[in-house]
Each structure stands twice: as C-alpha cells, then as structure tokens.
Amino acid sequence: MDADLEDLARRTRRELSGPADEELHRRLTAIADPDALATVLTQTQLPLWAREIAAFRLGCAGDRRSFEPLVLLLNHRDPERCLSASYALGRLGDPRTAAAAAALATNELRVAYALTPVRLLTTLRAPESAPALITALGRRLVPGDPHWRVALACVEGLGALADERARPVLESALAHPRLSAAASAALSRLP
Image 1 (cartoon, rainbow, N blue to C red):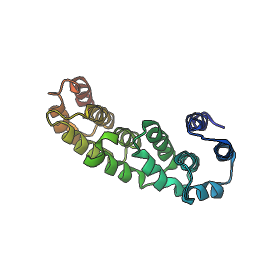
Image 2: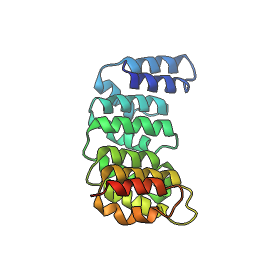
Image 3: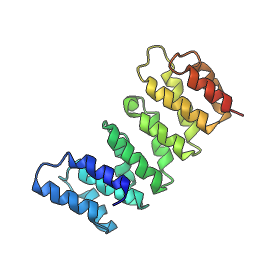
Image 4: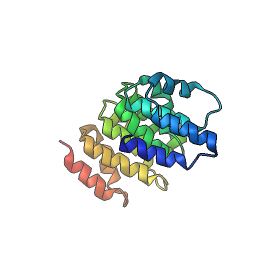
C-alpha cells in the first residue's frame, strides 16, 4: 500500500462502526480489481468512506469512472475529503477536471468549500485556471468578505500561473491587508 493510500486508510478507519465495516475497509484497501472498485461507486447504502476509497484508488490509477465521485468529494464540507479527491483528480488526467474545478471555485453558493478547487486549478495549470481564479478573487475583494483564505489561495495561484490577465485583480488585492504581500509577490512574477 503506498503512502497516500495508507493516509486515506488511516483517516477513514476512524469512521468504521463494527466488524462488517472493518472487513469492507480491509477489502477496499487491498483489492486490485478496478471493476470491483468501480462497482462500489454505484452500490447504494454503502458509507461515504467506502466510495471515497474506491474513487481515490481508481482516480490514482487513471480510471475515469472515478471522475464524478471525485468531483463530488472535491466540494465536500470535510477538508480532508477534498484534499484526497484533489490528489486523485490530479493523477486521474481527465480533461474534464479543470472545468469541474473552475465551476466549483467560482460557485458562490459553495464558496466556503472553494479552497481546494482553487488550489487544484493552480496545480493543473489548465486554460480554465487563470480565468476562474481571477473571477473567484474578484468576488472575494468586496469589503467584509469572510473567505479571505480562498482569496489568498487565488492570489498565490495567480502568482504561480503568472498570467498577465490577472494584473488588474492583483492590483486591487494590494489594498487588502491579508492579501497585500502575496499580491505584491504575484505581481512581481507577471511578465
């Protein structure tokens, strides 16, 4: 078992509620058959941790059947689930990933859960990345916005992407105390 799967197995083990769960958990972390893992994604009445393990393993193996479950987990209220989904989506290599991450990063109804999609967009460096980060950051610059961590991740991402289109929104971010230093650093990376 690789280190990333070990971390996931350790975390999800805390959610087990009896011998049947323990056996299912053991089987899902050991099984090698992708079709058996994909079956878990469509079975009803299985706990979320079981679907997460199956989706994670399939995603890391490049099996596109994991795409939809991983996107759902990317926008979950549990940050650890978001991170494991982001990691697997990054390894999946599905061309739909950037569009899905952009949609989640710019969804105002789910902005509290946008941090991981924003970071994933930076990692992907896809054509959708800079426009989505620019949009998300622009919305976070209103006075009193509570989602400064999302704004900071956008600023850092735009600095990493070094896309000239980000200049106006990064210049606006200079006026925000929590963003000022990162915005200055990001602007220094623009061409």
